[in-house]
Amino acid sequence: PKSVPLINASTLPSSAMVAMIAAKKFVKPGDRILVLGGGGGVGTFFIQLAKANGASFVVVTSTTDKEWLMPSLGADRVINYEEKDWWEDEELLWRAPFDLIVDLAVGREAWVKAKQS
Image (tube, rainbow, N blue to C red; front, side):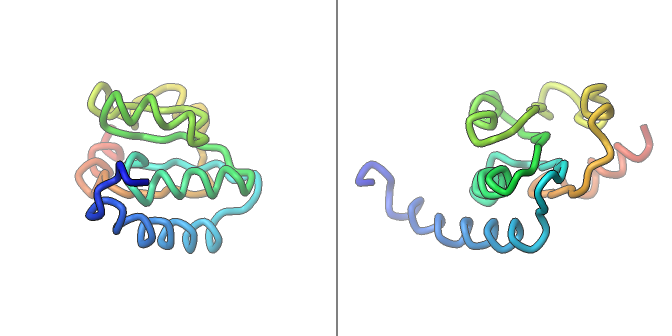
């Protein structure tokens, strides 16, 4: 669309391709997936592609705007990690174990904290 700046539009094909390859290679119908940092380009494409393949999701994201968007993309549960530690969420623990964890943004420090708690 004309309303999308060219610099932003130029990133869409690469984000979509990464998400498509990952979804095709790793997602099976019925998989339970935890997506960490799902609000970026790759994450938003991945959630939609994997949902279309029959997966269910918990998505961890960082802002209220992204938190609001995730269910419309296919997230079954959304956790805003700026408001609470995702690894201490009782509903998340109830949904575990996951068949696949996709870490697009959280990084090593969060995993170390999660393991210690």
